[in-house]
Image (tube, rainbow, N blue to C red; front, side, top):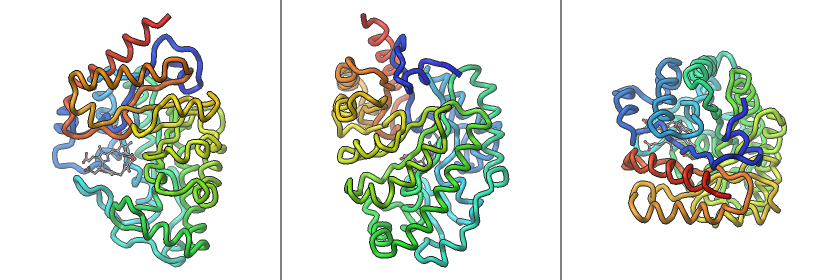
Length: 342
Ligand code: CP3
């Protein structure tokens, strides 16, 4: 479906700059806290009624230009036999981390309908309720998923993950192959069931050098993006990606999603304008609000001004102490400022 958001992903002229936020259906939102109650994230994600409700309430309450399916990057791994829980304020904790070739061979192949059928039902229900607002599907990228599987609990240093990458390249390749195959199949399933755009979260790959990224990660990400094809735009997200921008461009993703550490204008310059860019307000600034938020939002719009294909967003997920009012204010500023441009 054509929309301001999908047009911006494809670098077409748009009437105004579209906005959405990572984690827009999350704990900062009172309606989400009520819906969540004592349930865990995956129970909601696997219930089409609740999942669609979470997505649609966030879209309506904030006035954003896109919704994102309610799921978690860990969800498809359950069907592959991985046992984990998602702990509040920590993140995913895996019971038996993957450390050997045997561990990798014990992972079951992902079966799209069996392992993600509930997510697909949720997508169909969400598309109906969104009534024309585009829906973003997503998957974790193999490196970031491998990071959770190998470390066992969230650890941004990723020492064990890198140790496997350098020290046990055969195990690394076997694991990356399985995760790549799952990601392709999962994204295809989401597209068949109605998402308009897909975002690939390689949240933690910014911990690699450009040369190691090219060698150990890029071929898999490229394979995934090639397999999505040109029908649905792709967004590639990574935190702390300043040293990897040119490499991300070579994944052929339509949109690069960057965090606040970069001057957003540099992304277009370094990619010779051949990419759309998503970002990049610091989530802390969105939580602070007021004059600082207005100033920083204007500054990003100024830097993006002479480039085609901007999607306004935060550099990473919304912090849970953020007032929803601040996010509504950002949406208004972005729409109003960019509509008035000659
Ligand atoms: O609107 C949305 O964005 C909701 C859909 C969504 C969730 N997780 C639900 C969720 C999305 C897009 C994700 C992606 C995700 N999950 C990523 C990639 C994005 C990123 O932040 O880099 C990652 C790394 C995860 C793993 C994960 N799951 C973490 C680090 C956490 C936070 C733990 C915490 O409590 O702070 C989760 C839990 C989680 N997933 C929550 C939500 C809404 C919050 C906890 C809850 O509601 O109980």
